[in-house]
Image (cartoon, rainbow, N blue to C red; front, side, top):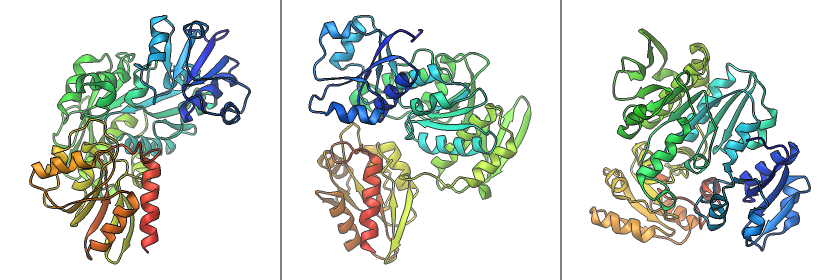
Length: 450
């Protein structure tokens, strides 16, 4: 679709919406930004965009909807929102901000999705890419909107993009050179309804890829392994559990690539800085992505050696009075939180709870495996998690009203040699703006203890 001469509405005034509106105005496209919250200040919105843009707040009439040629939808807004449905029923195209950025950008894309491990894998791929390429952009759900940099990309750029299911709902032509689907576990069911719908949405990352391109898939996850039958791209499997004849795998302490009869050691356990089996999977995926993007093994090794991990993912904060504090605020679903508790090698005071994404917590509780001394709960899901814990015979539960109270309780009761882990198994919404704010506050409260 040609955008020149079109009138485009950007829905949402968060970081994604502002980025999309700024890109469109810089490209000379007639742009209107919309938000259903009529209490917002129009001046504040235009100041954030940096250019004069028409702002509409509140209800959208059918007549107003029909005045647009296209809508760009921020990922935080559901495609089922009533005003979005007005556009759909009127036959007006709805694009994600990822689709918009792709329309304007140049270069080759490595795109990563999945339930868990996206941010770590994306950041690692970015580190590796920087060892091999002069022009690298790490964008998407990792924090920098793709729209912010689309016009800065060049033909020789490598764009490394973390893509959420929300962003994939409304792509049309978006096509990475190499895509990756790391794993699928139940998440965002409040929006997608079923795990099957959620998985199908994730699979859209590969829907436009051709037989000359590659899709990196987790062989150890039955759902992603089965996706190989549904894509046109060449499937590249990675496995922590199996030695693959064709793919990327762990053999003892060696991270291997085996392809077209050639086997190659990329790195060993001595070269990595990340703890836990889940991070070994992230490294394998990153090797698959970068190898098939055409990056040489020596640059992949250099990037792996340099990479120290990401904030809010089993992040060591401090040791106070012999107690180690870890921030795993990015553990926003039970499967991610399972990885957090599995990484602990001390008796642990576990802080959990938050926004209810309609998850179930049985497997998380079962994964405690004798490590959790007390479960400290807060937020909307506290009672639901407590009920699940009791059902599984775990009764060492404390309810608190705030994250600061949780940290203080843990500090008062933990003994030398224990750990305190924030790994909520829930989203931050309702109590915090996002998981970063939650994690930063946790670190602030911990540092206050010292």
